[in-house]
Length: 118
Image (cartoon, rainbow, N blue to C red; front, side):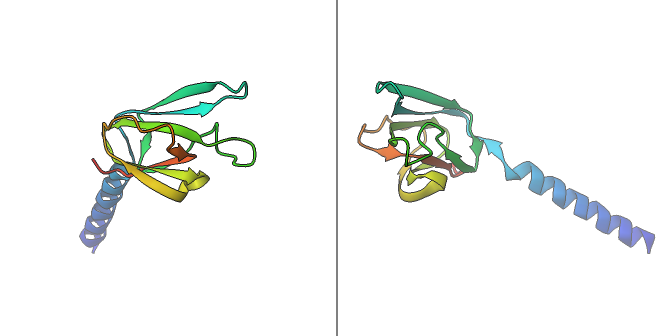
């Protein structure tokens, strides 16, 4: 009887270890975008090795009532990402390929979802 419980506990611990190690990682590379600063001048931000998968709110543009959206995203990570027009990965979205070219300055965004797909 003890062997059965020990075996079940070992399998349970192994399953927990496997799910924890596969649950989150970092997207290798940089994701950059531009936004209009409080002085009215365009500024650039580069985010390095973002947690993936997951949604990232862009802090400079997260509040639609007090800021314009960011623009000109560039996905230079090793993952597919989706950019969203609203905070919390809501609103209209566009998908950007890994290590893609910079987008047009007309592409507006407030949040980014890293898909975990390479």
